[in-house]
Length: 413
Length: 162
Image 1 (cartoon, rainbow over the protein chains, first blue to last red):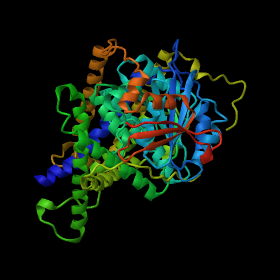
Image 2: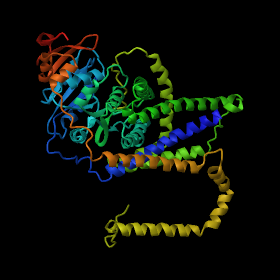
Image 3: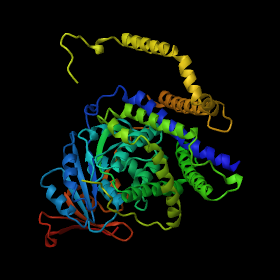
Image 4: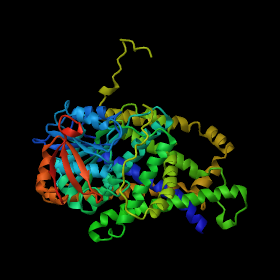
C-alpha cells in the first residue's frame, strides 16, 4: 500500500504540476501575449512617473561598466540610477565613482563592509528621490524598453506592489549554459505565467523586479537575514494583499553559472530560500484574508514531500539491485515502463508550448531546445537533491544571521 | 536552396484565413484516407511488434499507468486553471480593489529607517556617499564623498544618534 502510494506520488505530482504549468502558459499567452505589441513597442502613458534604477554590486568590477551602460540607455523619460558598492574588494567602488562623471543621473552608495544585497536595496529605497524602484543585479544588462514595461504596471495598477521581468541567459558556451536557456524559457517562464494566471507568484526574479516604495514601506522593506531576499519580499507583499505581476516583455540579459559546482551552489541557495520563507510564514498564513497564498504554500510543501518520496524510491530501487528487499519495499526494476514514455513525451510538449510562446522574445530559441529536450526530467532531479539537502540545512541554521554576498560563478566569458 | 523560377507564382500568404483552414483540413483528411488504405499491412506489422500488448498495458492496465488517467489530469488542470482565471478576470478585471496607493512623504520613509531629517536630506541630495552601520544594522552615518576620493577629502556631512 505504502509502496503503491510512493510510486504514484513520485510519478503523478511532477506530471500534474507540469500540466498545470503548460495549461497556465497557454492561458496566459492567449489572454495577454497573443495580441500584444512587440517588446520594442511598449505601452504609452501620458505621464511617466520618475523611477529609480537600483544596481547593488559586490565585486562586479568586470561587469559593472557594461551594466551601467545599458542601464543608462533606458528608453524612459525621467529616472536616476543608484549603484551600491557593497564592501567590494576589487575596483568596483573606484569604477562607480568614475562613472558618475560619465552618467549625470548616476548616484553611488559605498558600504565600507559587506552588508548583503538586502541592505543595499533598503538603503537605495531610502536614498531614492522617486516613488518606484527597478532593481537589477550588478551583472545584468537591461533591455532598452524594460523600464517602460515594468513601470506601466506600477503606474496604472493601484494594487500592484511589484512586477517581475523576464531574465534571459547570455552565456551559452557550455551545455550547462544551454540547459539554463531552456530552463528559464520552458520551465521558469511557464511557471511564472501559470502563477500569474492563478493570481499569486512564488517569487519575483531578484535579477529584475520593480517595486512600489509605499508597498515596501508597509511591509518593512527587505529582510536582511533571509538567504533569498526576493522570495521573502514577494511573500510578505502578497500577504499584505499587494499584487505581483509578471511582465515577459521586460527583458534582462543575465549571466548564469557554467560549472556544476556553481550551479549546485546557486540551486541549493534557492531551495534553502524557499524552505526558510515557508517555515517563517507558515504559522501566520492561516487567515481567511490570506487564503490566496494557501495554495502557494501547500504546493511548496507538496514539492518538499515529493523530493523525499522520490529520494526514497530511488534509493530503494538501487538497493533492490544489490539485495533482496521485502515485497513491501520492492521498487520497479531499472527498465522504464510506460511512465517513462509519458514523461519523455511531456518534455516534448512542454518545450513545444514554450517555444510557441517564447519565440516572441528571442529568435531561434528552438535551436537551444534541440540539445536539451530531456531537461525537464533533470530539472526535477536537481530540485529533489537541493531540497533534500536544503531542509536540514535550514533547520540547523536556527539563529537569524545576516545574509551577505558571495560572488557567484558567471560562466565562460 | 535555389530560388524559384520567376515564372512561378507562389504566395500562400495571400490566401484568406478560411481558405487556408479549409485546404489544410482537406489535405489532412486525404492523408488519413490514403493511410487508411494501408491499414491491413500496418495492422500486420503492428501485431508483429506487439502493439496489442502495448494497448492493453497502456489503456486497460489496472496497475500500470493508464493514459485515460493522464488524459483526465490534462483536462482537469486546464479546466481548473482556466475557470479560475476566467472567474477572476470577470470579477476583478474592471474593478479597482484598492484606492490609488499614495506616494509616501520622504520624511515618513526616513522615520521608518529611524534616521534624522538631516541625514535624510544628505541621502537624497548627495551623489556619492559612504554609509556606516552599527552592529544592529542601523545606519549611523552618511558621509558625502568629495570629488577627491582620498580620505582627507571626505567631509562629514551628518552624524546622528538614532
